[in-house]
Length: 418
Ligand SMILES: NC(=O)c1ccc[n+]([C@@H]2O[C@H](COP(=O)([O-])OP(=O)(O)OC[C@H]3O[C@@H](n4cnc5c(N)ncnc54)[C@H](O)[C@@H]3O)[C@@H](O)[C@H]2O)c1
Image (cartoon, rainbow, N blue to C red; front, side, top):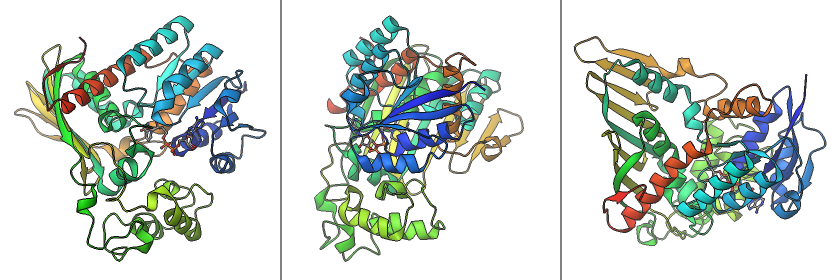
């Protein structure tokens, strides 16, 4: 069997997730990795037993001096993506590129230009496209069972503790390292909406702000770190409850998200978790971090074909995206929380699809992570064509950029493409 290799730039949570999926494949191995943090590389190597002799780099310039594998996966912080993707394409790499790509429309156009000039293949990590439940919704809409879709109501309900992890405590709280929350969290949702609407977004408006994760809302006498806090066993945002108590309750898994955010060391142990929340960024009081992003945002959109959509990005008790499709002949309700798709044609019996029965290969991002990597590897091995294009993936980003601009201007109506 012909063998292929992959290089990984950025060995954090996403880089390790992709590396593990590659390492499990019969005809792929990880050949080279680069991260500025040596501990991340140690952890990645320990999770990839089939990839022997991984070349290691701690500096992207050294790593990007020459092509080191058949393809590269870029999973560094948001603001590194365009620079590194351009350098990689110029070296001749096809690539898997983490989203969000950029919050600057011109930068996105420049990236597209390089991709078109070099002819390289780029798959953006919009893995929800590959999630079975989301695909099933697309098939149902295509079948015409609810007629013509005229409106879509979408919610991205992020678990309250996950929100704090991703946009309050982690690198995701910073606008210097990361992009606005509507792009960082919801480029997936915007991507799905334009694909379900089957049209480019014409205009949108958006509102949102940071109203909760601010020092004034800290519980009385809260300490700077959860391990020192009198509220350690009661506060819903207590890092001890999120990363240690929950880890015990989950049966002490070896190396799994979200516990591998608190400690990057493999194996995860109670000692490593305590060390992580005592000294690392995920153990800080959620109300005393410097948060530069909103903690909720709403977007209203009109597509060029007349379809309307709304999106709510909120933190909630139980996570799960929800999509309601309103059609001329019926309604479809997709709910990740209940793992169901209700298909309700007007005047006919309701049908309920159990999403769990559709999932194969684990359900990270609705099964999408594993299928995304299968798709990418099949493309690299020449077994199939690239199933999405960079140009298609950019559309969600143009929508997100317009939404954030509208929000900053108090909700004014914006043209997505001027
Ligand atoms: N597709 C998704 O659903 C999804 C989910 C979460 C995060 N993300 C995105 O994936 C990217 C990575 O997120 P993560 O959660 O893995 O973050 P992370 O912090 O766990 O990992 C990022 C890694 O990049 C390394 N790094 C930083 N600068 C570097 C450089 N110049 N060269 C090499 N390595 C460098 C860091 O040391 C770290 O190990 C981000 O852009 C994030 O927004 C996407």
